[in-house]
Amino acid sequence: MAVPFNYTSEYQRKLRTPEQAAAVVKSGDWIDISMGAGFPQLMDAAIAKRKEELFDVKIRGYLIMSPIQMVECDPTREHFIYNSWHMSGYERKLCDKGLCNFIPMVFRNLGFYYEHFLTVNVAMISVTPMNEHGYFNFSLSNTASRATLDKADVVIVEVNENLPWVYGGLDECIHIDDVDMIVEGEHGPIINIGAPAATEAEEKIAEYVVQNMCDGSTLQLGIGGLPNAVGQMIAKSDLRDLGIHTEMLCDSYLDMYKAGKITNRMKNIDRYKSVFGLALGSQDLYDWVRENPGVVTYPIGYCNNPATVGKIDNFVSVNNCISVDLYGQICAETSGTRQISGTGGQLDFLDGAAVSRGGKAFICLTSAFKDKEGNMRSRINPTLQLGDVVTDPRSQAYYIVTEYGGVNLMGCSTWQRAEKLISVAHPMFRDELIANAEKQGLWIRSNKR
Image (cartoon, rainbow, N blue to C red; front, side, top):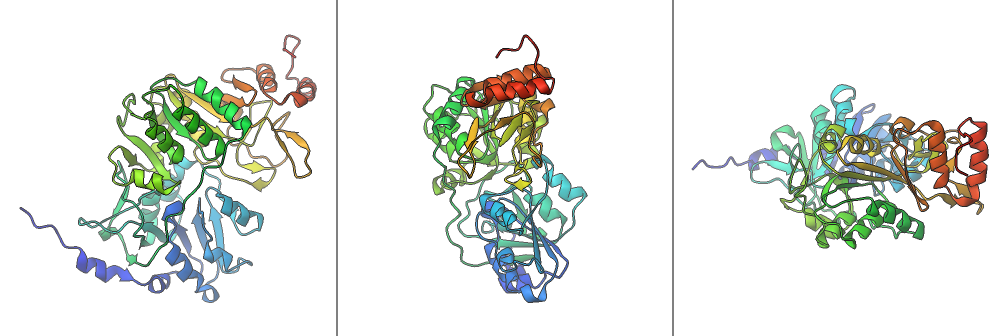
């Protein structure tokens, strides 16, 4: 029997304190920090301490859930300039303060951007402890981690003793040979993300979605209270033999699994495997994915690729949006010019579900909301407001669902779209919407009022 290679000496040779590793960062550098549970807290703090000697350091990250010290220590952005691929609630607040800039992207292409277009001087990611074969695991933050590290001039891994090892199908690990520096230190518990309680309107939307699913469906849920409501309703339903193929794994999937709904046995690809790109949720969720052969991680370039999704029969995609206009244009990331979220994988799964045999893509929104002055405002409008970004073009709009029902816009003309969308708008705004549709040439005599 061959004797395994001992990586102890190489590990010790590459081991650095956070301060020693931070010394590699130079003024003008582009540095990348991993998302979610992969956020390198020790390296962030060490680089922030060098603020006075660093200038114009550009940082890329996304879905960061805890304070970024490099940003917090520099309110003038003279030293550090932070940019996000996808806004968490924390990053949205940074953006409101002028401390974060958004980077538009379609999630499936993130690895492609790094491979072909971006400069990465230093990349940093939190990983599991190294195994006996010399591998560190990306754990809950696979996404585009390998593509980012492969492009970096310097690769720093921060060992987080609390991260679970997650089995994967592709690019879920990095070998010590491909690492330049290793940082160790004590970490607190992994960030836990609670599921917000669903509103009555969201429960009605979830009910419509679940009623339009079938046994054997494979599911992708977006972020927020509404997708969580869908998952919880599925857990209580009669649906059977469901599968998971998703960008983000959250506690709703665990609820469905505990209820016996998840088997993955009807999937056309990755049969018997729940597939995800990143995970954010509770400690119970993290314990579920730890060394679980039935829950595996792939990079986003695989999870979100419409060509991959389209191979899975009865694929169901459920995502939120902020507003829709009468043409079927969908805004899911801004309110006017204020950045709220990002495109993420919404368009990826919309495209993929549209070509899945029996597939359905649901874009969900409450019909109305109250503004800061307490006035009721419609989320379905004649046109998108000034500054609203089109996340999903009207040519790709599929099911639009509010608490008043759902409509399928695929193949519909402009007047059909207007009629259908007005039918699921809040009743107090329907007459006004019809009047605007008439002015815009979107209404004909046979339209239902």
